[in-house]
Structure formats: structure tokens, C-alpha cells
Image (cartoon, rainbow, N blue to C red; front, side, top):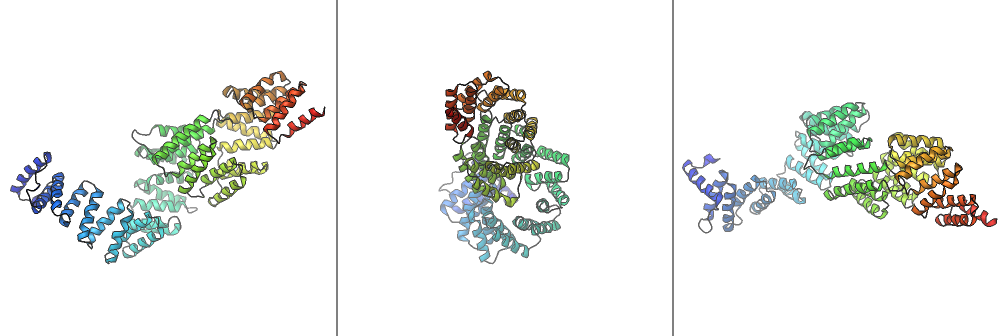
Length: 600
């Protein structure tokens, strides 16, 4: 382009513009707007954009609406990537040439790329002028899709394809719009795209997603996903889909190796790293998940990484529960801090609000949990099983098993997974239907054998149903899975108590009390064991400790009342039975013992 300038003038201009780069040209009031325009064009041709902009600024002061000046200014703004300035200069040109189709198209593309709601206006103007093309309709389809009008978006892309069916990108867009409602038509669109361009990565990714939803077509889906990943298309979700498909045909090692290769090639891809870490977390590989999070490159930050960190802390809290919150409370607060960081980066992250609601419920802050779940419900599918399950668990905390059942029924449209089966087990247990509860926990554990809470609750249900041998089996398996899970150790002790293995129960209870000295339930059970071993003199001290730690623990009052009754200290026994009744009005054994004392 510089060749258009006379060589003798070019040297002079080069010197002039070089001086101007250090000290702006003193042009105000000295040159006409026409001269300023010619100089600006020359400066732009020779690569002196700042000087050209300076000259144009003064020219526009004299001719503010001049379309030619604004066209040059738009070129400068385009070269420096200033979309807002480009739009301003386009508007100025369109005010003089409102029917210029090139200007309208440039404006539409700029507005669309900026995500502006007004992007549709210039395309509609082209339509009114009878100048709309297939490419314009394709652009309009994208605009309508982003505006939340999928039917209108589909109508536009189909109109574009009727006019020009040779555009593979348009076939992909049609497929993406149909994917959720008509997978067969979406697959047809993917095939049409690939018939035009066999190397179209997004077409392969679309085909893989569609085939993955069709029964018996896993092998074809895997081939499509492999093509997409090889073409670096489909984003991190296609990488994960490929791994899922490999696992579905038994290629577990290949799936893991593929994920490792993908992460090595895209180490800074935070959503991919978070997805792989989540996958390993959900498979019980907590240390592997933590290793991925620890290896995040410096400078990489993303809400999804903090969310996985929070979920990892939640999982670790579940493996060290003691039943009092003294041990796992720190992990829960750690989880809350990580999830809060995720929400600072992305306030519209529905999964983060869901996780925050769970943390708050486990910490006993039910009002905050309800608010977080409400926020999550606005951002996620209302029938998402994880959301329904968490809301149901919160309803159970409020004693509302009817609402909990309604929520689990709502999740059934997605099928009953391990989480929903677990919640149904909790509802049945709350209603005293232990056989039904055990059946639901069985379902949950069949679907997910590592589900700690389902196994813990089934263990409790076995104890309540006088099945201590089965309870002991569950407790042993939990301790093999999580040796520091004090709640599992407590259930093992209670199972052994039910089997009259008193000394073994004492050993487990002492481990719990060493870890949590004020564990009131373990102290109470230890006292019961000492009495059963005919060592009542060793029972009073742990009961006193239990009542200091938990003055409202009815079982401890009752146990100490029995101890005093054994020692014929009737007044103290009566006082303890009365305390047990104050703590729990339906404590029938305490009422019977108190009545017996008064009768005597």
C-alpha cells in the first residue's frame, strides 16, 4: 500500500511522522481538514497509527459528521482492536449512509461478537432492504440463540441452509439447536456437515454427543469423539465424553491415559483440569484429585478449580465424621471457604451455590442453606437429581418428610441414581420403615459401592432392625475404606455391643474418646459396656463427662439413673430419670423406671 505514495514524498513524510511519534504535530489551526485527511491517510498507510489518529481528531473537529473521516478512524480502531471505537465510527458512517450493506454487516458482526442485544437491528435492516444473505441469517440465528429464543434461531438457520446448504458451520449450528429436543435430526445435521468437510472438528463433536445418547452406538460415538479430540474440537467436554465412552466399552486404562495426555497438552485449561479432578474425586481417588489441583500452573485461576477444592474438602469431611462435628467441622469450613472463592469468581455458578448449600446444611445453618439452594435452583435445571436430593435432605432437617418425598419424586424424571436412592432411604428411616430404608440403601450401594453415607445409614438401620451381624459387616467395610471415620468405629462398637462382644466394643470406644474426649455418645456407650462387664464403678466417670459435654443427652441421664438404681441410690436415680424425661418426653424406659421408684 505504501507504493501508492510517491517515493520522493514518502521520505519526507517518513521523517515528519517519525518526529511526530515523539512530539505530536502542531496542526491545530494551521492545516485545512482536507490536508489533515490526506496526511492521516498517508500516516495510516505507512503504519503511523497514532499520528493518523491525532490528525483525524483535528480533522473531525472541523467536519464532525464526515463519513470518509470516520471510515479512516474505523480502520485505525480495527487495527488496535478497539471494538467500542469501531462501533462509534460505524454509527457515524451509517447516519450518513443508512442503507450501506457493507456497513450494516460490519456493525452486525461487531455487535454480535460483543454480545450486544442490539446486534439484531442491522440484520433486520438488511432484511428490510432485501439484501439479507444466508450468512446474514446464520449470524441472526446465533444472535437469537444467545437471546434465549431457540425456535427463532432454528428458523433462521434453516432459512440460511435452504438458501446455501454448503456451509458446514451452519449445519453444526442447526444440530446444536436440535440436540436437546431431537437427537436424530441433530445427528442428521452432523452428518450433513461432515459430508461437506470431513475435517470439521465441531461436526465430529456434535456427532459424538448425539451417538452417545443413542443405545448401542457407543463404538460409533467413540470413533466420532476420537476424531473431534484429534482435531482439537468440542472443548473439554468432548475430552471427557471420549473417556466416558472408552470406559463404557471396558477400555479403562486407555481412558485414563487419554485424560493424562489431554491435560499435558492443555495444562492451563482450568475447566478440563477441574473436570478430570472431579472425575477422580467421584471415584474415591481423593489423593489423585488433590495432586491435579496442586499442579495448577501459576497464574491459572478459575471458579471450577475452587469448586473442586471445596468438594474435595467435603469428601474428606465425610471420611472423618465423628457424629459430633468436632472432627469434621474444620474440613466443612475449609470447603465453605473454597466454594466461597469460586462464587467470588462466578456468582452465576449454580453448582457452586448447590455445594455451598450442602456445606451450610452440614454445619447446621439451615436458613443460609435454604437461600443458597434457592439461588442454585434459579441457575440449574430444577429437576437436577443433585439439587433435588440436597433440597430433600434440608427438608428432612426441618422434619418435613412429605416435602422431601415430593422433591425426590421430581428428580425421578432423570432416573433414580445412587443419591436419590440414598435420600429415599433416609425418608423411609425417618418414618420408621427400616426394611424399606435398607432396600433403598441397598440400591444406592449397588449403584455406588463407595457411598459412605448410604453405608453408614444402612449400618444404623441394621442395628435398629436387630441385625447386628450385618451392621458389623458394613462398619468393617467402612473402616477399610476410611480408617479415620470415627462414626463407622462407633457403629462397629455398637454392633459388638449388640453381639455382647463387650471388650472389643470398649476398645473401639476408647479410640473414639481418645480422638474426641467430649464425645458424649461414645462416653455413654462406654459406661454401658462397663456395667455389662460387671464393672459399674468404671461407669460413673464417663457418664459424668458425657453430661458435662451434653446436658441434654437423654440417654446419658437414663444410663446414670440405671447405675444409681443398681447402687440403690434411689433419689439420685429418680432425679436422673426425670432429667432424661425433660430432655426427651417420649423416653418410655425412663418413665417406667421412675414410676417403679415412686411405687416402691
